[in-house]
Image 1: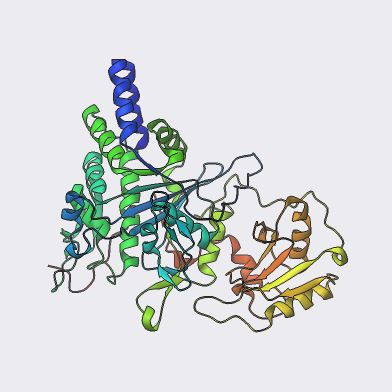
Image 2: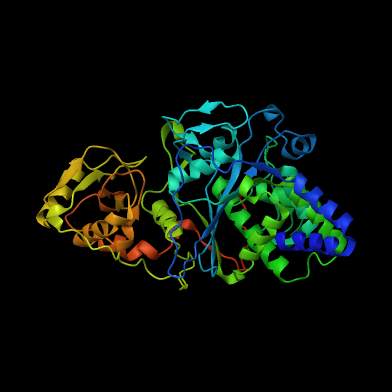
Length: 491
């Protein structure tokens, strides 16, 4: 889509010289730009593959801001007019280093997590790190999309290169410019309950081609789809996006120059991007990267999650083990579709490891989570296992460091070989040795995947490169998906 937008601009420049240049400047000026991250934790650099290539990660954000008449009309909820915007759609788009595959991971808006410290670049207001769980969509109100980026990085450790944000009116205008997208429902559906809640979407059983405001309704529908949860809405969004990609790649859409210009206007008017992406030519370059991925290598997935209890009932939390497994696959550039890529397994460091007796290792207990207390004295027990392997300087560290998967962290390249040797001594995959600026020496964090026992679980190592079933992965070429309808919302 971005490639077509930029192509029509290029044609205008070639065909009309000065007038085309002015139009190009006009489009550039309409793009809104903000800081990439508002957090105070620097993001780690990407790790290149054997060919020197690095992956590309873009956070896609859908804002529910009611800050204009158009957004107020489309969004409803008058009681929220003038309030802080919420990041109600959050999807991380990952393009592999070799550009052979693409993964999109959604985080449900009801996810509860700790917020990082964020500083609003316009007002200078500092939002301190939260000490209690906060719903993830509130990140946008803590200074802008840069805080949503910081929140993702804090939770996942995934380096994010860019963000793109769109609001209600932007979705409608771009959906109109793109043209119809086919979607499917298993029964007649009307998203409206007795209290008047719902998106208003009304479709007949089978395939329907939607665009404009109807497309926005589909993307916002919760009441009427599956179990009426935000998770059902996320699945519907994945279905729409996959269908849109298939339609655009057929080549039947956007062949008319007038429609291309409409899309160029709609896209640049609707999008807020980070300053590193703030220009039509840069969007074109990005599109060139994205178009290399075939449709059947695009995988949509949802962060594995569990429901909270008590006062947090109805909210979701990252599912221990599965969520970190999915995040780890993205961090390590492992395809979510299970197919081979040009990526090679992590190579063992060329830096020779020091003798075990000369290697200091701190062992932390990371077996706790939001839903489970840590295993008592776990760091001490694993430090004892290392002592038995000759690592006599291994000691337990009382610093809490909850993590789903066991990791061996090291601060600099000269300790990578030592970290990998520690991992191998306990049967932990070499890929678990990762560089981190949060440690000052080799640090073993025993995760929730190894709460008990003297040997690292073989099942944890075996499943390291497999997408969890709880991620509900959907392939971009799958055109058989049809949305299940919630009882009580048919007509």
